[in-house]
Image (cartoon, rainbow, N blue to C red; front, side):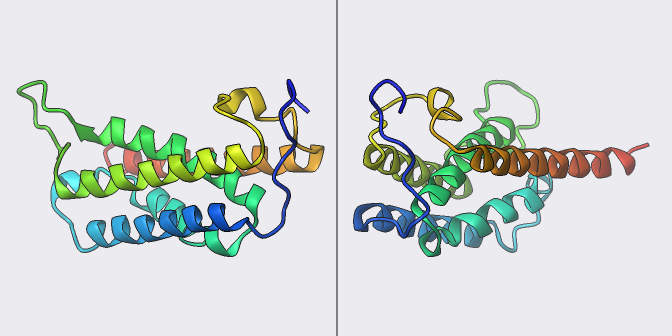
Length: 174
């Protein structure tokens, strides 16, 4: 236990409240995927589409998984989706080519997905007794060694894929 907080949710089927939130995340992931589909204009080409596709695939499958497995995936998706929004959707504060803009339908779909992910993560943390603790405070304290290794491996795989995607993009430029 961490400062009186409960242990992990367990790798069992999610409770009804969490399952409803995970289903909402899955619906929002599908909606974002639909909003992104078929769009090929140049600003969209900058998006890390393969990485987004992987994240969306995982999020759409959350209702079929376990409570703790879902919580772990939500933590990763929350961080990465926010990074993508910050890095690729402009607030139009300058005269530069804005690329993808905020407050357009694709950004709205991403924002709704991020909100659904955060809500589901809050419900999962509440069910685990982790009321509003930052993810870093609970990251490894209440996981088994095998669970920590799984999370580290998933993070390493995601970083490797990001590096691979970036290296492929740079390869074509030089």
